[in-house]
Length: 131
Image (cartoon, rainbow, N blue to C red; front, side, top):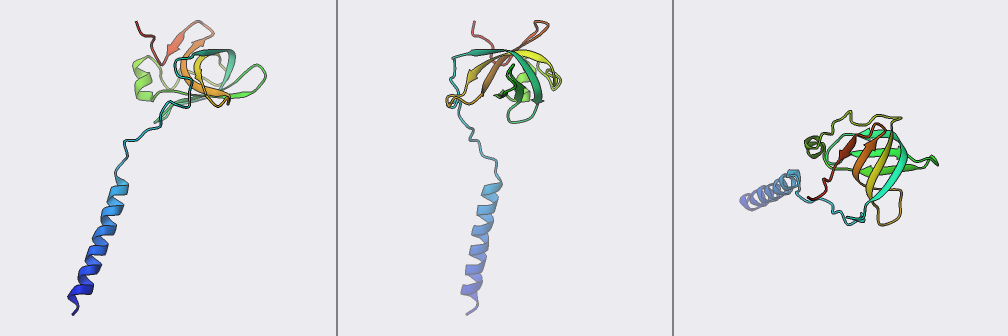
């Protein structure tokens, strides 16, 4: 009589709840580094920092070259970078730097930041060279 429709409603509600609960679990997937020419470091000098973004899951340096073209460099997480001496004040807008980076494969202006050399010679490294 009323037990079958009630049972179906309870099952449907339980299934919907399971789907919603499954969506709430953070995924462990992460994008690959296939978009970069990994291991093929290029260098850009006289880059003016426009913005330094210290945020998870990746940091970003936005900078302009001598022709006023904007570049974007992805970096490691703040947690990882802090182990190598970086912090949220490592770079400031207007600062002139040299950037070592792995270029984007598609030719856009940007890549994965490997190192930054400041005007005073200080080198900030994201990927330490293997010994």
